[in-house]
Image (cartoon, rainbow, N blue to C red; front, side, top):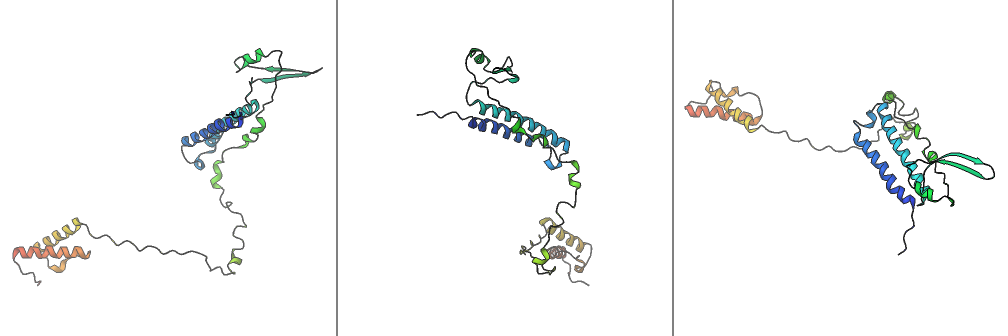
Length: 231
C-alpha cells in the first residue's frame, strides 16, 4: 500500500485549529459575566490574550507549511552581503532544534526559506473591546429612513394593522377551599351556634365554606337538642 504524502496543511488543521478553539472555549468559561456587560478594559485583556495565542499559532502554521517535512533550523536573518554572489548571516539560538543536522551539513547545499508570519497577522491590533458608553448611544440603533413606505403599503390608512391574532387558552378554574379551610368553617359555625348567634350570621364567603359553616351551626343545635328555628 502506497504511503500518503506528507501534507503540512493537515498537521496545522489538526493542531492549530484545536489550540485556537481550546483558547476560545477557555476564555468563554472564564467570563465573569456576558460579554456585552464587561467593561472595555476587561474586553481588551481577553482580546490581548487571544491575539497572542493567534499570533503564535500563525507563526507555527507558516513554519510548518514552509518546512514541508524537511529538516528545519529556525533562525533570524541578520545580514545579507551581495558582492560576487551573496553572503548571508543567520543567527541561530544554541538550543535550536536540528542545529546538529545543520552542523553536519557543512559544505552541502541548503535551502533557505523565508517564513515571515507577519503578513498573515495584519490588522489584529485593530481588534479592540467596545466602549463602555456603547449602551448610551440611544436613538441611532435605527436610521432615519427606517419604516419609510409603511403608509403607502397600507393604502395610506394608518388605522390598518397587519397582525396575527391567536386565541388564548381559557383561564384555569379557581382552586376551591382547602380541607383545612373547610374544617375551620365548620368549627366557626359550631362556635357561633354555641355563642347564641342565629344561622343568618353566616359570613359572606365561598359557597363551600358557607355550607360547612351551616353544618357546624346545625351540629351544635343537634347535639344540644335545641330548636334551630331562628326567632
